[in-house]
Image (cartoon, rainbow over all chains, first blue to last red; front, side):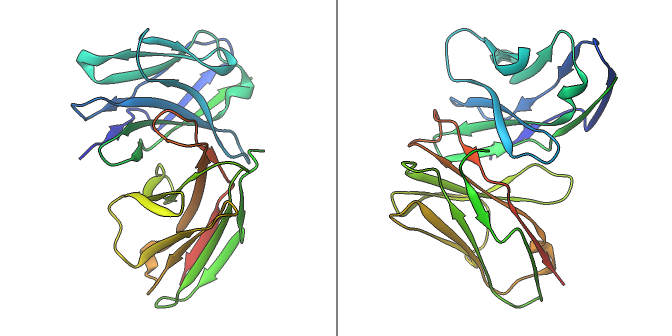
Amino acid sequence: AQSVSQHNHHVILSEAASLELGCNYSYGGTVNLFWYVQYPGQHLQLLLKYFSGDPLVKGIKGFEAEFIKSKFSFNLRKPSVQWSDTAEYFCAAYNNAGNMLTFGGGTRLMVKP
Amino acid sequence: ETGVTQSPTHLIKTRGQQVTLRCSSQSGHNTVSWYQQALGQGPQFIFQYYREEENGRGNFPPRFSGLQFPNYSSELNVNALELDDSALYLCASSLARTDTDEQYFGPGTRLTVT
């Protein structure tokens, strides 16, 4: 069965610090990968997605993620975080075999001003 | 705002009862997926409907069932409620195939089973 794991449950950073959130998936076939974000009091929304091609994908608000097939990883990065990036971040993987999107457990990011 | 709405916002039920949760997808979205999000965890896929037919199912028992209607609305029904069913239930709609299309999430229904 497919699974997605996120290494950090809680991350606290100061503004301007660099961010990297880990995500690993366990599925040997073709997967499509996503990062979703949930800001306080808001709906889950898409940050970025990877289907094929350039393994470095750029999303909204300066976020990017790198797909490393050999490591089954899809880590999220941002060079300089802002207070407004405080949110919960979810990595997710989709495989056509089950038509299902599998989410990781989430990482709660707090950015101190 | 994503255009996806859910009702009710909160609900309290007793163990053994049945519950129906409702979702209104964005206009034109043929696919709706339902997720269960327990406290402190990521959303877990329950099932997906495409053009009113179930199109994929996660590891949930048959007492979780759904319906999708032609007017872009859908329902999640849960029979014989258990305490562990307490969670936030999310629906998400997409234009067509969810492997390539972004899913737009609603705000969720918080279900408490006592």
